[in-house]
Length: 248
Image 1 (cartoon, rainbow, N blue to C red):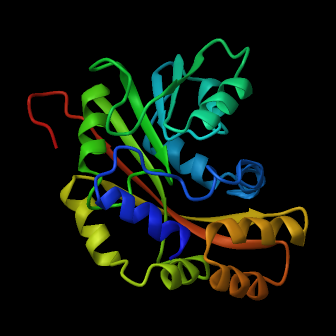
Image 2 (image 1 turned 45 degrees about the vertical axis):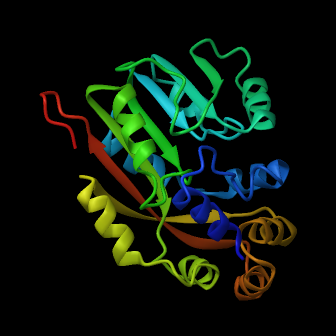
Image 3 (image 1 turned 135 degrees about the horizontal axis):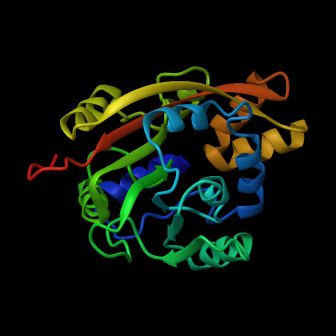
C-alpha cells in the first residue's frame, strides 16, 4: 500500500489524528522536499489572489514542523500552527522561536484548540482534507472562522502529469470525479496551479520521491525524471464563511 493511500484510508475511517506518511517518519527529508516544492512561488501567488491574510489572524492546520508559518507571519496579525504529532510540534516551535506573532499548538483538524470565531483564514496544505471523510474537519474550520473568513486548502492535482500518474499508480481506487464533486458540494471554488519542484542534486530528488511513493512507484519516478526538476500540479480550493445566518 502506498503512503498516500494509508493517509486517505485513515481520513475515511474517521480517525481523529491522520498520520502523515512522510514528514512524521522522515522530517529531515521532508525539509528537503519543502525547499524544493513550488520553487517559483506559484502557489503563494494564487493564495494571495484568493485570500488576504495581511493584518489578520491565520490558522495553519497540519502545519508539520512549521515550514510555512513565517511566510504567513510576515504580514499577518497572528499565526497559529496546529499539528497533532508531538515531535513536529517541538520542531515547529523551535523553528518559529523569537517570531512574536506565531504560536504552535498541539491539536487535530477535527478538534482545533481554538475558540469559536477566532480566525480570519484557515489554511491547510496537503494535510487531512482529501475528500469524503473530512467533513468533521470542514465543520471545525467553519467553527473557528469569523463570518467573512476563508478556508483555503492546497492539494495535489492528480490529473497533472507526471506526478499525478505516479499518485494514481499508488491510489488505484482514487476517483477524481468523486473528489471534485465532493468539494463542489461543499461550496469550494478551485484554481489549478502548475509548479516546479527543483532539487540541488539527484540524491535529494530520489530521497523525496521515496518518501512520497511505494518502493516500485518511487523507483519508476526516479528513472523517469532525467534532470533536477519536475512539474507538479496542485489545486487551491477555497470558500468563504458567509457573513449572514447561512453556512455552507
